[in-house]
Amino acid sequence: MKQTLEEGRAQSQAIFEGTVTKISPNTATQFRGLEVRLTVKRAWKGVERGEVAVLTASTGAVCGYPFSEGATYLVYAYRAKADPLRVSLCSLTKPIDQAKDDLKHLGKPTSTSSNGRCAASPGANEGAALELIALLIAGFALVSRRSWL
Image 1 (tube, rainbow, N blue to C red):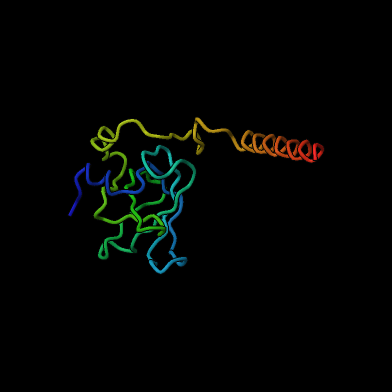
Image 2: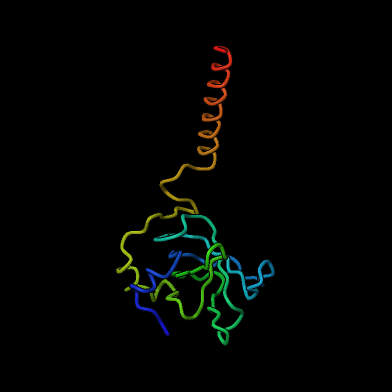
């Protein structure tokens, strides 16, 4: 039975728009089925940016969602405790061109991507530079403290 938009939003641990980059058999968990990798374009809940993997059953006969490589979806994913994210036919997941009402209901995303990167986050080099500066400051503080002892 399909959920209402309110139920889908409340019961999903992750809601995002993503483009499928790879579909492969899932051999990493007991769940089996398929592992679907998606590049996150916009997110409303539970994920930020970059690539996300979701699991789904291998066929619709056992509630697997029929993802296609290269297609873009509005994904409503769930998990139990620390399990991987999962998607089923009963979730509100759908092709993005069929998600007009959902997008209106969800409102403004919490993060958006620009060429696979969150527009508001530092780039890889900027993030590494910030980490290096923090490390240098911590090292300087440690050396300064030792000289006082």
